[in-house]
Image 1 (cartoon, rainbow, N blue to C red):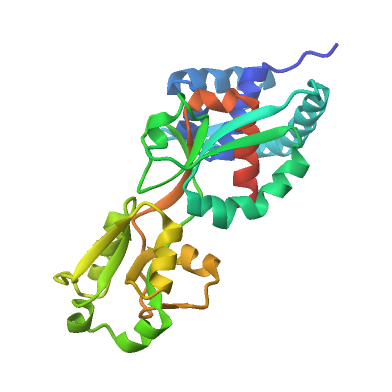
Image 2 (image 1 turned 135 degrees about the vertical axis):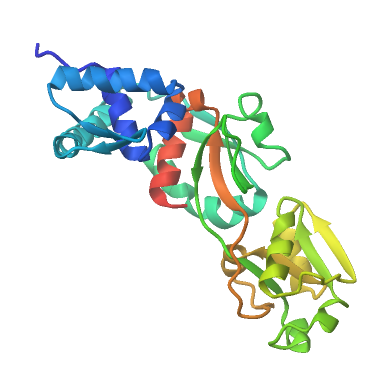
Length: 292
């Protein structure tokens, strides 16, 4: 039998390339930077060639490293599929996933059938409760969270970039007009999600209305309820542009054509070692690869 490269070193190499970051790869593998470096060096010694240029603590593929990746990566994928096909086909794979309910409704559920067809044995328990990141490793295997930046101790992948939109019922939007009017806005109720408090501040700053004090601010823990409250004319919702577009609710109208970068994004998060569990790895690879 031909001699094989050290598989742990090969795994480290592939993850560094795919993550684009040694730090992210080390976090994903649950390794220290020095341990990751030793694995990469072991692979280079086995091959007898340099795979990376090391510059200012950053790793950049050499031409030989790029060529090696292009040859090996598809073969490893084929191997993984072959091994998976030999694993007990009668046993269900169970993932305990935390996710905001609006993300699940608008982005996850419309695509889950694709995942089911790809991995029929993978089943997901959905938890839409609070404090999802704090329950990782306890009641949750992985989570989708909305945050400025997740805890550095967690493995994380950013799923999107967003704009802040203000929108309300069509009738109220017509009443407010196309130009921001501080006097009119000060008589309105604003609808804010508990997990997106800084969105309102960002929106006010972008419109030059930092001193705006509305008649009231109503707080919600449900994105679906904010959408419905806005559609019913109960106030002005401050949410992500993606939420507005995916709702497809013709009762809603956006206020003012102003681009506002959101302080928040959706992230996939889990404990670094959780990626060694097949349900987590299968879901992670599908989620990121499908661009959910």
